[in-house]
Structure formats: C-alpha cells, structure tokens
Amino acid sequence: MSTYSIKDLEKLIGIKAHTIRIWEQRYHLIEPKRTDTNIRYYSDDDLVKLMNVSILNQNGYKISKIADFDNDQINELILNLNSDLPALPTQTFNLKKSLVEVNELLFNETIEKSVKIIGFEATIEELVFPFFEVIGDLWLSGAIIPAQEHFFTNMVRQKLIVAIDNERIKSEMPRPRILFYLPEGEFHEIGMLYYNYVARKLNFEVIYLGTSIPFRDIIRMDEIRTFQIIFTSFVTSQGEGILAKRIEKKRKAFPDKTFLVSGWQLKQEKPHLPKNFFHISSSDDFKKSLHNYLKRNVSKLQV
Image (cartoon, rainbow, N blue to C red; front, side):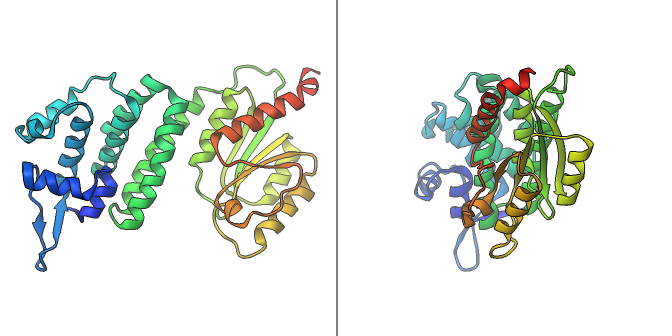
C-alpha cells in the first residue's frame, strides 16, 4: 500500500491542501494517520475516497451532504453519474483514479465516455496529452511509481493502435507518403502514434517504422518504397552540438524531402532548421503542415 503526503494529494486530486484539511476537520471525510514525528500521511483508500468526493462535489453535491454518505453510497453515486456530464473535468479525475488503482476497466470506460461526448481526436488532444504532463509531475514527486506510468502509457498505446487499424488503406489510388520513425535511442512514441492516426485520417499513405531506427535504414527504405515526408522526434540529449549535426546529416541525405521534426531537444537547443525542415510543437502544427503540403503539391498529386 502506498502512502501520500498532503502535497501528493493536492497534485493527484487538484484540490488545495487547505481544502483537504477542512474536509478532514470539519466533515471528517478521512482520518489521516501520523508518523512518529506527528506528520500526516494518507493511504490509497484515502486518495480514492477524496477523488470520489471531489468528482461528486464538482457535479453538484455539497460536501456537507457527501459527508453523510458511507463509502458504498459514494461509490454507487459515482457509478450512476449521468453520461452527459461535462467531459473533461470529470474524466480527468477518472483517469487519475484509474492510474492510482491501475484500473483497466475504469480507464476504458473513461476514454469511451469522453470519445462519445467530444470525439476521439479531442479526447487525445484535450484529455490524454495534458494528462501525461500531470503524470510527469506525479512521478517526479514520488506520488506514483514508474509501473503506474507504464500501465497508463500502454493503455493509451492500445487505444491508438485500434484507431490506426480502423484507418487502414482502402484503395490503391496515388497518395502522398509519409514515413514515421524515431532515431536510435529514442522510445517515446505515443505522440508519433497519434500523428500516424492523423495522417491516415487526412488520406496520407503511412510507413510506420517505430522506435530506435538507425538512419542508414531510412536511406535504404527510400530505395525500397520512396516517400515524400519524414516525421521524427528528438527527446534524449546526445550532447552539445550533436543535434545540429544529425539534422544536417538528414538534410544532405534527403535535400528534396519534407521533414517534420518535434521533441524536447528542439525546444531546448533551438538548432537552425534547413528550409525543408518544419518544427512540430503541437497537434495543430502537424495538421497544418500536412494541409500545407497538400496545397503546395496539389498539381503533382493530380497527375
């Protein structure tokens, strides 16, 4: 069983520590234990209960009323919440709960409900991607362990793969072709998987190679099945000046192809980008780049 400080609860639930103390002292919603040095700490059960209380409170239940309910009643109310409630605030709390509990059923229900209300793309862009930033903060603070992060990441990965499979090639008509890969040593592919889905939705043909691919294989791949656009990302630092050299190497190998590049290292080092390179810092950037490519090359695509 994990233990949490009041600051951990603040980050996990999004409720100020001052408010949590009021809920404790005035309404007796939870009773934290104390260390030998008289410091409060909280259990998994405390965390889950406070998450449920917060969800009910956001959806119109007064704290004074919630305090009269036992745990079974609170859980029943959570299960019976109307599916038409506002998506993002409620579903963000449910994602947190699924993360803490490592609860696949709750994760799936949360994503499916959000998709029903706001659609798949908005669910990924407005709910899931921002939640990864929350996970990073929780992991750094010690509020969750790496295994919980891996659980969530792999659940998202499964959803993206199913969505991608539903956008499979439906005809042999000529279409622009985009290759996705991450360089050697790069393994963070969730964003790239989503862009794979977006490209297919926009009727691009996709070659998806995955993570940690040597650049010599990209050169060879162009001989096997040529492509017009390359997407890649740089997250892991390789040392000062290395990123600029890697970009120049790619430019020399493919001077006539369009590169869409993203990643934390680009933001940190801000290397000069050749004219055929475009920095992708968001989903909107990616979509605009593909739309712009289609506009620039519409005559070629009609031939």
